[in-house]
Figure 1 (cartoon, helix red, strand yellow):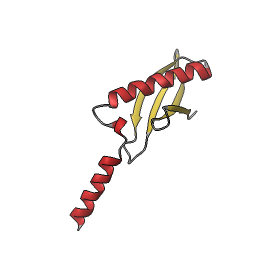
Figure 2 (cartoon, one colour):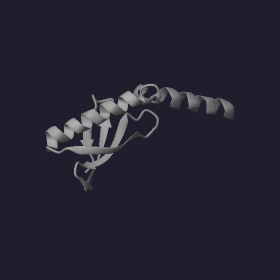
Figure 3 (cartoon, one colour):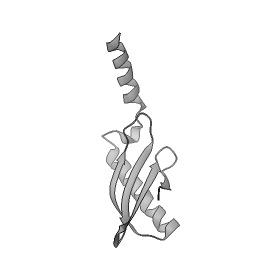
Figure 4 (spheres, one colour):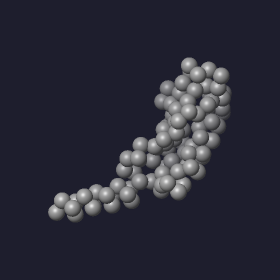
Length: 95
């Protein structure tokens, strides 16, 4: 019974992960999220940014990409953003 439950959980987790986070397409997903975030900061906040880290939680069916970085030329002025891959790569600034 325990083995059956473990197999079920593995199947749900494996198929529940958004396709854009799969190993074969993650590089493309990261590049798109980076481009969208740079454009967002340039157009909405008139800021040039440097992205230092892009990741996703790896949790079941969470379509969020987490981006951290700083304003170009000012490493003290940091930012964090979330890009929703399920909502046309919409950018939400955390700070």
